[in-house]
Image 1 (cartoon, rainbow, N blue to C red):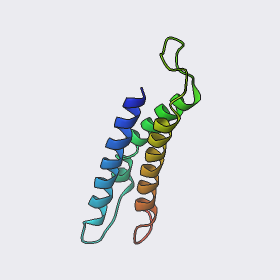
Image 2 (cartoon, rainbow, N blue to C red):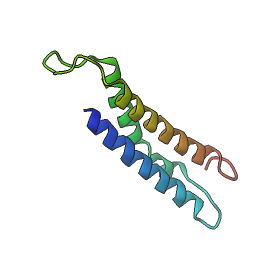
Image 3 (spheres, one colour):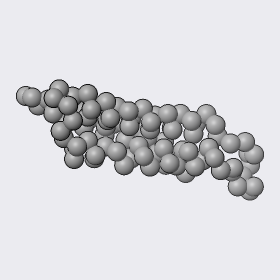
Image 4 (cartoon, rainbow, N blue to C red):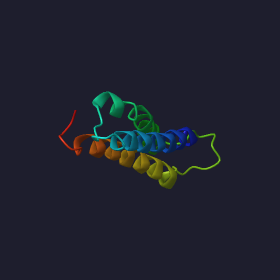
Length: 98
């Protein structure tokens, strides 16, 4: 599950960057809310999965009894930074939100 959170976080960051660039490459840079919304589900899913892994202990059958603090925290941080990138791209555009 943690690997899936990482995959969603990385793919979400790439998609958010592409959406942000698409909004900036127009003659008059605008990022409409429907376009920005495309980049939201993957980082949200990654944040939920990484947060769930942080809050719930590993099954007793697992070889390690420690929680994966570092990998889950990094995946959660990447997902939150991706959401911040989309929010900043949308709310800080010239002319305000569209």
